[in-house]
Amino acid sequence: MKGGAGALLFRDRRAIAGGGLVLLAAAAALAAPALLGASGEGLGDIVARRFVAPLAATPDGALHLLGTDAFGRDLFVRLCAGARVSLAVGFLAAFTALLAGVAAGATAGFAGGAADRAIVALTDAALAVPRVPLLLLLVALFEPGVLLVVIALGLTGWMGVARLVRAEVRSLRERPFVEAARALGVRPARLLARHVVPNALAPALVATALGVGNAIMLEAGLSFLGLGVQPPTASWGNMIAAGRDALVVAPWVALAPAGAVAAVVLACSLLADALEAALAGEHARGTAATGRASRGTPLAR
Image (cartoon, rainbow, N blue to C red; front, top):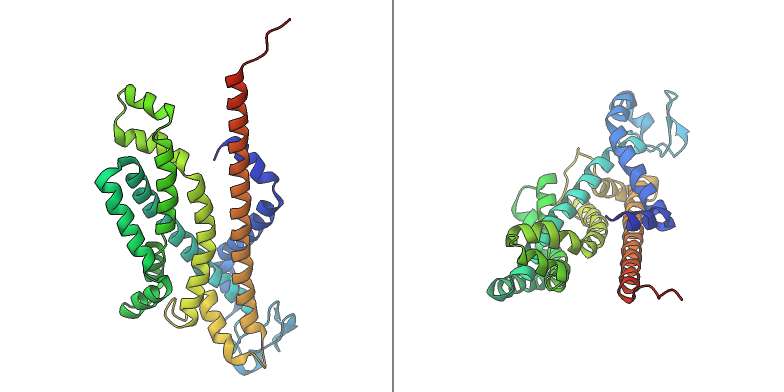
């Protein structure tokens, strides 16, 4: 990202709030192994430890910030462990979609002709297939797991990125700097990779920020249905599913992971809005600077 856009981003309250929430979730995910080792899961009387309310202590004197679940496991520790899986799935799926979308969109926009028509037809055909039923079909046909969820989400989410990048590349390929590079004998592949694609990434980055939240939401939905990450591996989706039968007696078991999903999805939306505003501000500043340079300075009297 350009320095000017970065400065605008760091001054945006939406970016500060969204980035703070994401960093908090990432810190919880990184702390999960240490917390799991210190929590003593599986020790003691499960009956005495189960469904302990938030900020209450079990008979052994251990305080539980978010309470415990049906098996007496500390919900805060489980939430941190679930953050490792949910955040990893969200970021890896969005990154996979970004790579595939940039590759397809840049190739189509720069090559033009038959290659452009073929990739656009493939993109339109993929967009015509409903994403959620396709995801359900994929995870039903193969053994559910983290890797399958990442691949399924990544390979069903690249089409929007491809369309955005194609439109930007088609606009950029006629710019003077591209024509100058061609006149200097720069090879097309190098021209595309070094000069065109970096200038076409702005809308793709905004879409990717939104894609992280969307992927986390979809993973939670698949895991809630039992088609995503499987227990005993914790993810926010299967934690919500585990708490749905105890909503009356212990609503915190489902509300804690549901709140985590909502907070991270909101954070991704705030970051995307801030990133879009920062990139638009940098573009407006660059356009104004170009206009002033083209007009020149007035002659001194």
